[in-house]
Length: 396
Image (tube, rainbow, N blue to C red):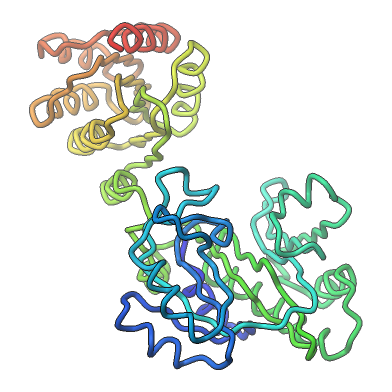
């Protein structure tokens, strides 16, 4: 789960991480009070969407830049050009995202920019601190062009962050001033504590800055949380902005399904994440393009299968459906019942290929055969993928 920058900075403040003063506004009526809550003749106005590249983005209205540093007297006018308009960046895709919140912050004098993040290292299954002297740019670019400028420090969860970890980061970034070393020590402790206590999957500051006065500030903030741990954090769930998420993915989450929308035209309904990945791969192998990842899980019932079909068919890009079920815990008969029930509630007007194998497969196949539904059975995953790719190509 993602949150907005202004929400992340509010969390940072709770954990003692220094950030520039700021205030968010969701309507034009709130602009003046938000602006009055911060000081300075120069301010920063930031569009709040769940995507990077805001500063280089362009609004569909033609207005350029979702992040502006400008005189205080121009802030409200510029905020008005952002709020309610669609911002397109390299991460949003051409459809862009509507800006529903504008964030006013104090401008900061920047002496030097750095990159700092904590995330889960998959290789070691431990938290890792990533830092670099090259802040303010995509860390992927730095890693590719100047890998020697990337600092990686693995943290043992049993001990948490230790003084020597912080010294490695501080000296790797070139800090030597005693006051700044104390500030960085406090920041790293707070950042790790926040990462651990909130079950975050990533906390990122880009850029982390030093000012001419010697202060260290988190100028930007990006935080992602482990969705599997949200049941422990109702206060984090309360920060969720459903408007920033695909409605189909939100509906799937509410139904207990794992769904991710893709840009293809062949929908997949599968039980098990590994099988779902294999199904998408084999569709690509035979020349098709998957429209989604959809894992109904091992214990789905007929209602969930029906809901899965509704979600799939709500995507106008879907031109065919491949159901690939291996009945281990799940009964193939349950899937068959779900398909039949779905056909009663939603019109399945695209080619449908069904491959069932495993628990109660004979009963499942018989139920589908007796239903009279217009579907194509398949005997193997390879057979199913070839059939749906061919049917979609013929229909389009």
